[in-house]
Length: 169
Image (cartoon, rainbow, N blue to C red; front, side, top):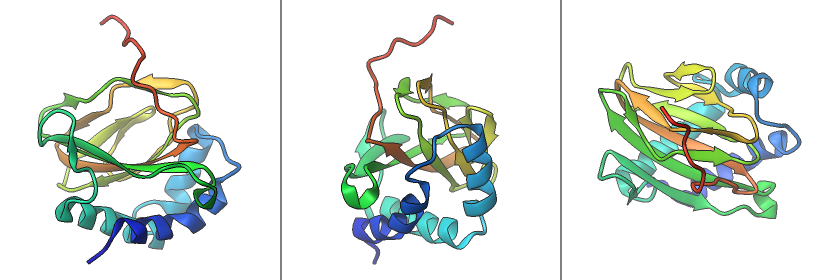
């Protein structure tokens, strides 16, 4: 049985490589090329976070009922190059929006679909598996369609803000 520490330990070499990079379009492309589906890192960490959701130690706190849950697995610390690690589970066949938020320092978001065709909206379109890397100061609704996904995100300094007002629609 896997544990949160297994996921944290698997993330350390990855975060060592990323510690001096900035979220955005270039990093998103690089992450998908170097660490996307099929890579050893992606498959290992995706398996661990799936285990965590199944076993109740990841994405286990309801935000909007059982279809939208999250949990912080690790606080920023020196060992993680001051990144936090959070898991989010979202499940909806129809497009579903989560909680509007801002990323003061950006976000590195590993998208793990649990159903064929499940996708998460990223800053550059829908992502069915792989990475999104919203820029620093970006803000958005997390949005899922086509089934269930897990978003495992790494936040520089653990910074995320839910006290931002969404734009008028």
